[in-house]
Length: 71
Image 1: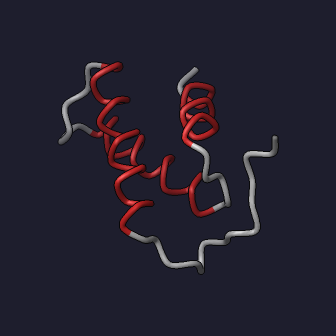
Image 2: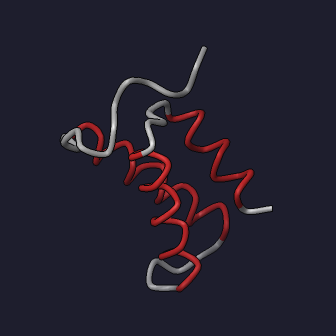
Protein backbone atom coordinates (compact mmCIF):
# COMPACT_ATOMS: atom_id res chain seq x y z
CA UNK A 1 0.00 0.00 0.00
CA UNK A 2 1.34 3.40 -0.92
CA UNK A 3 1.55 5.90 2.00
CA UNK A 4 1.11 8.78 -0.43
CA UNK A 5 -2.18 9.94 -1.82
CA UNK A 6 -3.43 12.61 -4.17
CA UNK A 7 -3.64 15.15 -1.34
CA UNK A 8 -1.41 18.17 -1.43
CA UNK A 9 -0.50 20.89 1.01
CA UNK A 10 -3.26 23.01 -0.52
CA UNK A 11 -5.93 20.64 0.79
CA UNK A 12 -7.46 21.91 4.03
CA UNK A 13 -6.49 20.12 7.23
CA UNK A 14 -9.68 18.89 8.80
CA UNK A 15 -10.53 18.11 12.41
CA UNK A 16 -9.79 14.41 11.95
CA UNK A 17 -6.41 15.26 10.42
CA UNK A 18 -5.58 17.53 13.36
CA UNK A 19 -6.53 14.79 15.82
CA UNK A 20 -4.29 12.32 13.99
CA UNK A 21 -1.33 14.72 13.93
CA UNK A 22 -1.78 15.61 17.61
CA UNK A 23 -2.01 11.93 18.57
CA UNK A 24 1.19 11.08 16.72
CA UNK A 25 2.99 14.14 18.09
CA UNK A 26 1.97 13.38 21.70
CA UNK A 27 3.05 9.74 21.39
CA UNK A 28 6.39 10.70 19.86
CA UNK A 29 7.03 13.23 22.64
CA UNK A 30 6.41 10.53 25.22
CA UNK A 31 8.54 7.94 23.42
CA UNK A 32 11.43 10.37 23.00
CA UNK A 33 10.96 11.86 26.47
CA UNK A 34 10.77 15.37 25.05
CA UNK A 35 9.18 18.42 26.59
CA UNK A 36 6.53 20.04 24.42
CA UNK A 37 8.36 23.37 24.62
CA UNK A 38 11.76 21.98 23.57
CA UNK A 39 13.55 22.75 20.33
CA UNK A 40 13.51 19.03 19.49
CA UNK A 41 9.72 18.95 19.87
CA UNK A 42 9.40 21.94 17.57
CA UNK A 43 11.55 20.21 14.95
CA UNK A 44 9.49 17.03 15.34
CA UNK A 45 6.25 18.96 14.84
CA UNK A 46 7.63 20.65 11.73
CA UNK A 47 8.76 17.30 10.29
CA UNK A 48 5.34 15.78 10.97
CA UNK A 49 3.54 18.67 9.28
CA UNK A 50 5.94 18.59 6.33
CA UNK A 51 5.31 14.87 5.83
CA UNK A 52 1.56 15.37 6.07
CA UNK A 53 1.59 18.25 3.61
CA UNK A 54 3.69 16.23 1.18
CA UNK A 55 0.87 13.69 0.99
CA UNK A 56 1.67 11.12 3.69
CA UNK A 57 -1.66 10.49 5.41
CA UNK A 58 -1.48 7.05 7.03
CA UNK A 59 -0.60 6.96 10.71
CA UNK A 60 1.82 4.05 10.36
CA UNK A 61 3.63 5.74 7.47
CA UNK A 62 3.92 9.03 9.35
CA UNK A 63 5.27 7.28 12.45
CA UNK A 64 7.71 5.24 10.39
CA UNK A 65 9.04 8.26 8.56
CA UNK A 66 9.44 10.18 11.81
CA UNK A 67 11.43 7.27 13.20
CA UNK A 68 13.65 7.18 10.13
CA UNK A 69 14.16 10.91 10.37
CA UNK A 70 15.36 10.69 13.96
CA UNK A 71 18.34 8.47 13.14
